[in-house]
Image (cartoon, rainbow, N blue to C red; front, top):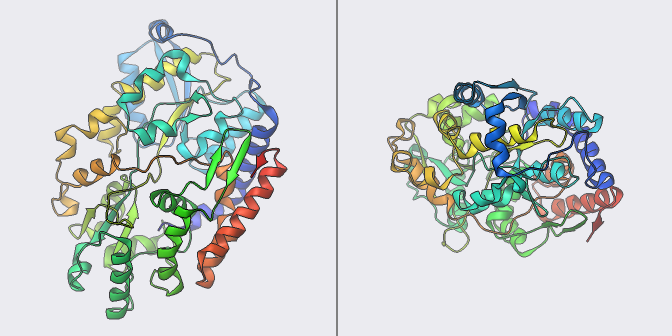
Length: 447
């Protein structure tokens, strides 16, 4: 339901450039080293590196980073972590790819979204952390996030956060229209019709086309449109799960039952606060967005499980990221030790204190976290809904090894279906054709 904001649109050219460069590197460089040894080590090397100390550079955009770095340096005073915010999204990946291409100037540790990880991991630009024993931590994380830090046969991070989707809805608006919270997508469509009929200025949600939302919704429907082993790629944006989603969503788009308000804009925040938008499906990180940016909606919003196609629980991830060690790092063992501390040890606590939603099973089962009442949501124990969702993520999802590029051309393909209020299958077919052509041009074997 999120769509590209004006800020994101202004950065679109930069992201295209980054995606083109990244995909070219991916197709042409194999696992060639990017300027450093990348390190061959063992789990014991991490503790030794922490004791010896040194300096590492960390690129990230996360709000918890300063607190995490301060706590880490307090615990390990021999280590100096140089924290750099290289930008978010497009800016971050452009700078990261430029450093990789140059063979120097990059960080030891970089924040990488799950969807972007294959694009950097498969060409061998990141350190495989299995050598440091990280594969032993699998049971400490949710299955969906653990799968998201793997690419090919390698492990390239530890999950930091997760974004299992839930339905956030305005209780006042639902009460106004005497609506029950929908448990199926058919019920959701009927609720959309009721809202639009009784108050044309309101809508069930906003959606005018967003690649991340589309892929998450296809994921929830059981679709697997992208499959890749790093060399061959299969794309099928007309598979059963995809068509299950479009079968529902076409009814909203073609009948103009959704608002075309761009996400992450002042208009969007205002619409969430004043009741224009009645609900929105987002990842588990959403409560922080509401609390910080939708002040007028305080006390009105609630969380519920995602509607499904058959009433049986199922959801998908929406967002999330990890930290990866670059091959060009001159101290990969120390960098890996920092990643372990961030997402497996004491670093998780300041992340949670900043409002992050964890991927660690222990925290997702901690009563202090699960049963916490949120005043913004009328005292609802929202995390009960969200932690349950974390156990219901549909398995089997993969991103393209050039997902960043795919996202940049979404508006030119599927986006046109939204603009013309026409069936989404046509836009998805155009997206697929463009992605197959691009993959072939970059040297992949695309089916």
